[in-house]
Amino acid sequence: MNKDEDAELISKAKATAIKHMKDEYGLDVEITYEHKLPTYVSNKIDFKGNVKEHQEQTFDIAVDYKTQEISNFLYSPELKDVLIEKGYKKRE
Image (cartoon, rainbow, N blue to C red; front, side, top):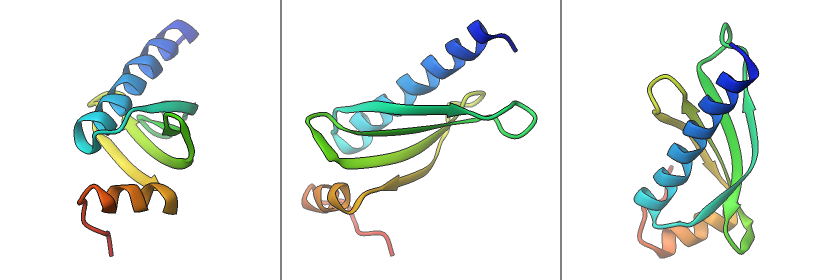
C-alpha cells in the first residue's frame, strides 16, 4: 500500500469514527491522533480525540478500514459522566 492509499483509508475511517460518535452519542468530536498498523498486523486504525470545545472529554476508538466496523471504544471519566448524564448505561 502506498501513502496515498493509506491516507484515503485513514480519511474514510476517520469519517466513520466521527459519524459514529455523532449518531450513537450525539457528540461533535475532533480527532487528534491517528495510527494505522501495518496491514499484516491488523486492519484497524486507532484514533484518539475529544469532544469539540471539551478537551478533557477524550476517547479512543478503532475502525476496521475494510469493514468500517467500530471497536475498542474507550473514554475518559469526564466523557463517561457526560454519557451517563445523557442517559447511556454505565458499563460494568
